[in-house]
Length: 388
Image 1 (tube, one colour):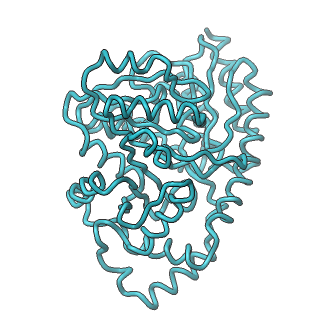
Image 2 (cartoon, helix red, strand yellow):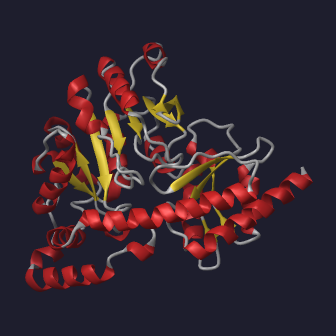
Image 3 (cartoon, one colour):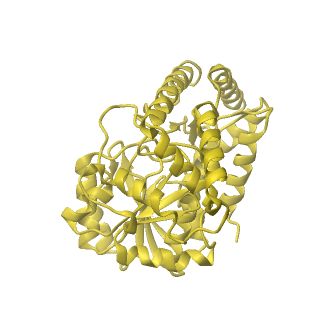
C-alpha cells in the first residue's frame, strides 16, 4: 500500500537525484566524503579471498561485523555483544520490522511531533493510529506525558529520534532522556530508538543513547542504527540492537522480507573497519557538514529574514518555521520553477494542519550551490507574499 506521503517521499528522492535541480530535499550524505579509494582496496581483498561475500549470509548478519557494531554500542557504559545485534537492509527495513512485530491494525503508536516521514509511512502500512507527543528544543516534553498516556489505554510502542532528529535537527537533553524512559517503563511501552544521525555531532559532547540508559529505568529499548549517514548509504547496511528475547522476534520475522542483508556490503564494511579508522572518517564528514550548515544558516538569515530556525548541533537538517501566511507546498512549487527543491514540513506530522514548516538538507549539496539555491527560495517566497 502506498500512502500519500510515501508518494511525496518518492517524488522528493527523484528530485534529489535530478541533475538540473539544486536540491535541499533528500537526506543524503555528501558524496565527497565517501572513501572510494579505501573501499576499492577492501573490495579487491574480499573478492579475491572470500567467496562467502558472494553467498547468502545468515539472517542475523555477518558475525565479525555484528561484533564490531556491539563494541561501538558499548562505548556508553552498557555492554553488548554480537548476539545482541541483527543486521538489517538499512534502518528503514528495521523500522518496518518494528511495526510488524509490535503493531496490529488499530493500535496506538507514540511519535514525536514532527517526526520522520519514512517511519510514519512504515507504521501507517500496518493500520496504526498515532498519538503525537509535543516537543521543544530539549526533545519530548515529559511534564504532562504520564497523564496523557493514562487516558489513552494500551499503546503498542513509541518511535523516537533523540539525536539530531529528522526533520528538526534537535537533540534531547539528558534529563529528558531519563524522564522519558522512566515514563515508558511505568506504562510498559517498548521504545524504538532511531539512532541514524547520533554520531554526526558538531560538538564534542556525545550524549548516551536511550539504549545505554535503559537499564536504570527498566524500559525496553530497541536501538536502530545505520551505516548510511555515517559511511555510505549504497551498501544498505543497518542494524538492530536490543535484549535477546526481543531480538529473536526480529530474526524470526526478517526472513519474510529477505533472507539476509547484502553479504557483499557487510563484508566490505567489516574489512574497512579492520583496515581503517571509521571515527576519523566520521570526523571528516562532520567538518564538511558543519561548514555547509553554517553556510546554509547564513544564507537563510540573509534571504528569508522572516523565517525562524535553530542552528542544529549535528545531523543533516535545518527545520524552518516560515511566516504563517506562507504555505510550504506552494513555496516548493514556486521554487521548482527556479530549479530548487526542499521538503515541505506537512509530511512530517502524523496529523494535518501544519503548512508553514519546511526542512532543508545541507549535507548533499555542493558548497557553491548553497547560497544561490537559498537565494532562489527567498525570491520564490517574496513572489508568493506579493501575490497573497
